[in-house]
Length: 119
Image (tube, rainbow, N blue to C red):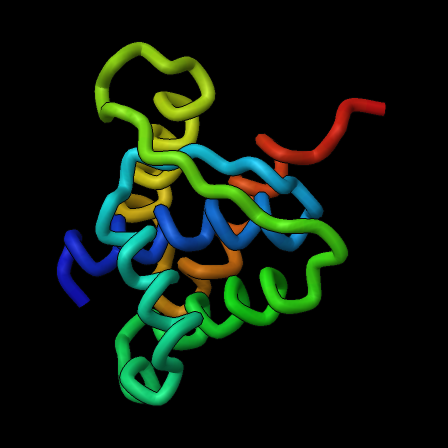
């Protein structure tokens, strides 16, 4: 899996963390991720063998089971949007430092910290 696929997976993992934790409004700079999610929701059979299929299925399941509508927003990348910059840094760190077998879990755990409410 190349760096592009790893970063794409990290972007999707961040979105998954937000949706799974009940956030109804999620911003991302990854237009590709938004297109993949839309395609998974409208034509799930087309992603059956997609390299990110498991993450896309998790996102689609969380969206379908959500008691309230989920809204996604595309934001400009590298525009000093603090949480977006933080998420990008975590995605890059995960893509370059994690072991292949546990990348998704580590990205998910890192991204989950961003979205968990402070106690």
